[in-house]
Amino acid sequence: MPVVKADLQACQGYANCVVGATDYFDLDDDGIVILLRTEVPESERARVTEAARSCPVSALVVED
Amino acid sequence: MNTTTVIVGSSIGGVRAAQSLRLEGYEGEIILVGEDAELPYDKPPLSKAVLAGKAEESSIRLLTREQAEDARIQLVLGHAATGIDVAGKLLLLEDHEPLRFDNLVIATGASARPSPWGQRPGIHVLRSLDDARKLRADLLKGGQLAVIGAGFIGAEAAATARSLGLEVTVIDPLPIPMSRIFNPEIGHWFGDLHRNNGVTTIFGTGVEAIEGEQGSFTLRLTNGQKVEAATVLVGIGAVPNDAWLGSSGLLVDNGVVLDEYCRAVDAPQVYGVGDVARWRHSKHGEDIRIEHWTNAVEQAACVAYNITHPDSPRAYTPVEYVWSDQHDWKIQVVGRVGGNAEHITIGDPETHGRFAALYTSDGVNLRGAAIVNWPKALLACRRGMATGITVEELRETLQPLLEPRPKVAL
Picture 1 (cartoon, helix red, strand yellow):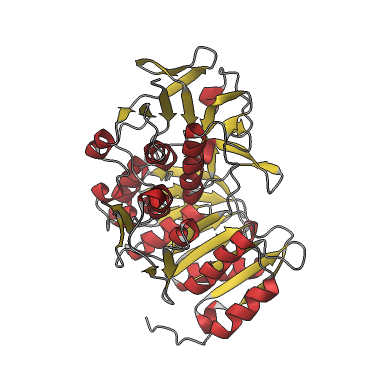
Picture 2 (cartoon, helix red, strand yellow):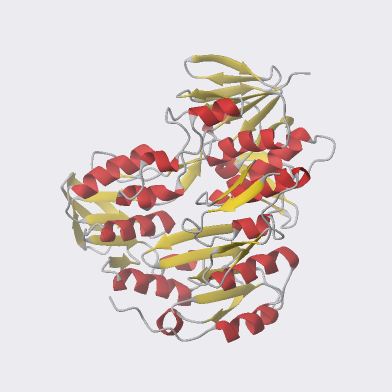
């Protein structure tokens, strides 16, 4: 199953991912991304990939 | 049936439209056309990490040749689009044969408004990678930098130049520059931010002329003052790249005019994305054009969906979002702010090192917010804008989170 991965060093807390897929992403008090789930069912790949790609600093990726 | 989608414009909107089409399962041909001969690159870092020399050019690429090949995206770079034959479904290009399309995506972006004070070596604009290279080369020679225009680009470049050790003067005709976007109280804080970081600000004064040559310019201001500068950056906004559509017959009015599904009002197989697109925002009830990175990304995803689902298209109704990094401030703006909207401010830069200004037009509901250095407030505002929230509810959430923070010693 595809998985979503985060680069916590790159994350700048823009929150685009949270807006794109609030059931997968959150931010902690310092504005760093929290992954609520990592496994992405095929049926949700498009939605979660769009949310990951909306990161302005490319901190998120959905991989097979 | 094999169809072809041609995308004109190789910046973020065009690249994301191509990638999102594949994500939506589009099987046809995708041709991505760019006037810039460079491989597609991301623009937000140009005034920050790239100008500062902290980012390799390879790190800002939006699409490599391998990624394009894997996604079956054909690249036609270095050829400007010159027109569209809408009836014949042809895109006309400079020094290249016309491209036939079934769907066309217009994503030609915007250009820096050119300097009205002459264009010669040492007088810069900042929009493209090549602009950033040239400006950086001049900054590295040292000497004073004069920035005309205290908007986001000018302010970010001024901050970067300070970080490189240059003396910087920012000039803007408005007495409180950011009051265009926010309100005078917050506009003053932006002025303080620059001055606290060693930038000289001259506000409420226009530029009459730039005299002299690279290395020894003199800016003559409308109040009689003179400013010496080795290098000048002109950051006075952008204009949509829509002149090439003049002969197409498409309706153009400060951008290509689109319906609520981002289709040209007079040609439903032609779509628009990003800075060049003026579309009907059905929730706002007006035609708007937005020059922000996040809008280009979200609009590209919507257009890709609509091309692949022509029988059930989605109206495009985003909540606006833009950010700017200046000195040690991360500034984030959600929804619609400023204008005549009432606002309350929670926190302040001096005591808390962070603040949020919440705007309302009906006195109750959140209409937009400007947030500095406060991730939790940003998230609360973005979620609240998506689902609907009152300013009072937000105040009750955010106020208790505020604690005075000691100022970091410099």
